[in-house]
Length: 472
Image 1: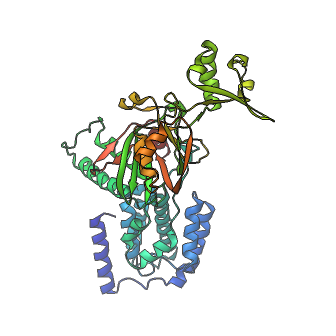
Image 2: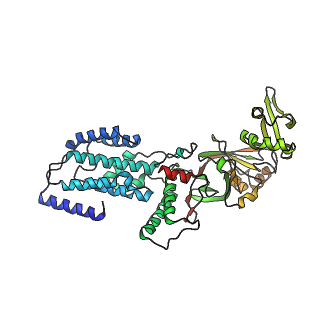
Image 3: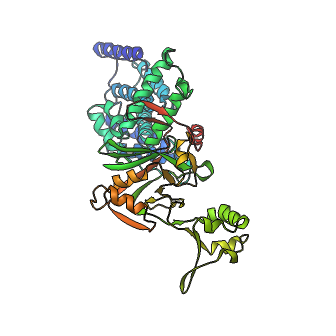
């Protein structure tokens, strides 16, 4: 309902009341049976069971009395105004039936002198409630299930109590509801601000807002911000007082403490065919001068072929072959291995010894997870100069591993910078448990807010933008 339409609605309402033109409005008790009938109908055809469940619970708490039309339709008009603020969250009011709600409000206004339209009022009330909870679910938890983009990508935000929060906001200030249930992150609010600026520029045809340095148009940036607002809805509200964030499209790691950046560095992430999974884990230990236990996929896909071509390859790279037997672990000679027999290879373990050639570099940071992904050093420092750094087998390589070790061990005074440096070069594996587990979040934000408050855009490294656009 446009502002002019709203004004006209209130003026007509005021004139009708003063003239005594309209009949007595139906009471809550009179509307309740019709609302129950409507609830039964929408439950049977609900596209989203979670939304239908909230609608049912909301009316159960009030014995099916109307939420929006008990004293005229003014409250329904307020709800429609809230639905139309969906654009502030990168969502679209049409998805929540805003025009149909407006049409029904206008039609009911035209029936002011007719018999009390109990059925239509009940339908409108339930329609508005359904639209509000549909919007609430989308703002709080997102429209898309992240697992549809990557089965390893899990939703982590706890759902707020939408029924209780809507009831409270309805009794005080309905305009506060979406702010109360949206993600709590300041980055979300910052992206909302940028979205508003871009929408204003797009609607006014402002030619002073040209494509940004990546060549993205205003419309393209709007779409990217909408998709990345959605991704913030999949993250937990509490990232941790101290936490580490790895953003794949920006190829960066940021460590934050109490909301402030404590450390940042470039990273190398998984290549497209070895994509780094998106998850949250807890860093619980640091391993200095680590062994690299080589995954079977790398042994079969790379190591075996290289050793078959060059029998000195394993020795030159300090890689041992081990076999576990009933008597313990024994070394295996490369010459005795049939490199074309994958079944035989699976029975063996391959391990690279600590040292300057080790693929994990001088230190790795453990965060137990189902994907066997961790953060680590690398001897290939030259790769950090490349703008596109999706180059690893899935783990995250660090530009400044010593700085990260200093940060995560700063509350353990026995591990000062000199001790850390020595342990990294000792060529003898040394695990160190952290006093407190540090949350690590590996995310995929192709639009993000930098430390200066400017919005930046990055490449769609794994094609998640393209896939998400088809689902929304």
